[in-house]
Amino acid sequence: MKDTHLIRVRVNGREHELAVESRRTLADMLRHDLGYTGTHLGCEHGICGACTVLVDGAPARACLMFGVQADGQDVATVEGLADGEDLSDLQQAFSDRHGLQCGFCTPGFLMLAEGYLAELQAGRGDGGEPSEQQIREVVAANLCRCTGYQGIVEAVLETARRRQAMEMP
Amino acid sequence: MKPAPFSYYRTRSVPETVARLAELGDGAKILAGGQSLVPMMNFRLARPDALVDVTRIPGLEYLRAGPDGLRIGALTRHRTVELCRDPVVLDGFGLLPRAARWIGHYPIRARGTFGGSIAHADPAAEWCLLAVLLEANVVLAGPAGARTVPVSDFFEGFYTTTAEPDEMITELHFPRAARHAALTEFAQRQGDFAVVAAAVSVDLGVAGPPRPGAACRSVRVVLGGVGPLPFVVDTGALGGQPAAAATWRAAGELAAAQIDPPADGHGGPAYRRRLAATLVERALTEAAAAP
Image 1 (cartoon, one colour):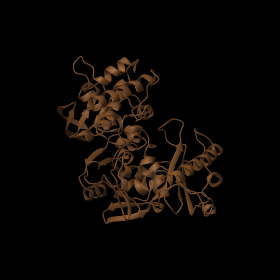
Image 2 (tube, helix red, strand yellow):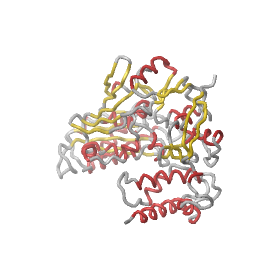
Image 3 (cartoon, chains in turn brown, yellow):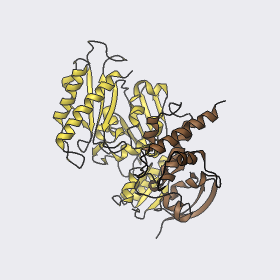
Image 4 (cartoon, one colour):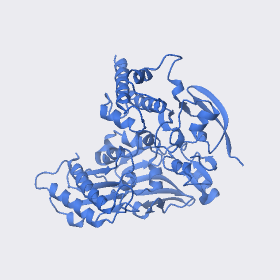
């Protein structure tokens, strides 16, 4: 018999109530049950980072979490970044800096970077503008087989600087 | 790449968890950060009948430094330790935040937990090495109440501990500060499991970098990636030696001579011995320079 649980989860601010089998990963639940197919699955064992989403604001590999664990939590996926046709600042920076080619890994990189940028904004850690080395260590979490990372590093660094400048009084 | 079916339970307190584990028997596993357990389930290397999700238990996420050392709640995320800037913690236990950056990658550190890493007992895991280096105690809750076990009696071998199936780790207790301590490791790519890792501490008797002519009271060296358990190097010969580069190099050679590391795709025994010598020397150099 299937072990199924009724859960409530917010995805990009929208409430969902659904029955989910316990063995269903968060990634599969987002894609197959809720239709958020922007979350991509690469390796399905926590190595490639393609399925990275934010859970209660912190980055998580959605293949290493079960959907049932997200009960009562806030999930943010790539679908929540753009406002209609208008790309977010981070997405625009990825485009401007050629931080993607085939785009398969891009949703994971965007959510990874959003998690890190939110942490910076919250003033956790040592604060200040992140160094290129720090950004490189963050994006090393995810695999990209096309761009060679240079454009991704530039896009994240540029967005970090812009957001910090906007916060200045 | 999909896990086998299992029953899922979510508990809200430690006693409820222990009762649930006792009821479910040894086919059940505790689910905390899931960063090691879930990949093993996706590969079906692990097929637990039931998971008990403890991540919603309140009050188990903390770092508390006091006169009796440092206490870390089992559900404290690696990232929380890494970003800790509490001066009381940093004074004496700054090694832990510095070492945390070696654990996996940022999203793994944002979810993985301290207690989970100790329970998983990977002999190359950073927290396991530091627990052995600093002679930490594991606090466990079980049906008969709480018990405290020194890590030397806790780790048994690869992924094996003396915790009972109905026990849960609630806290790690580090009784003694170590100002001059460091962890360093080598992996072919950043974030991979360490091929060899070295955790060291040196007792110089005083804070600050060693003064010219200063001697080491004692040196501790623990290695990961060289066997089924964190390996404690016999460093008796280093007591009283000068706190200087020649001693750090000698410590590396001493470590290399004592280990019998395994061969795998990352390298053979001879390669791991050279890595151990180099990493011990580097770690001691860093440890002696710590504030």
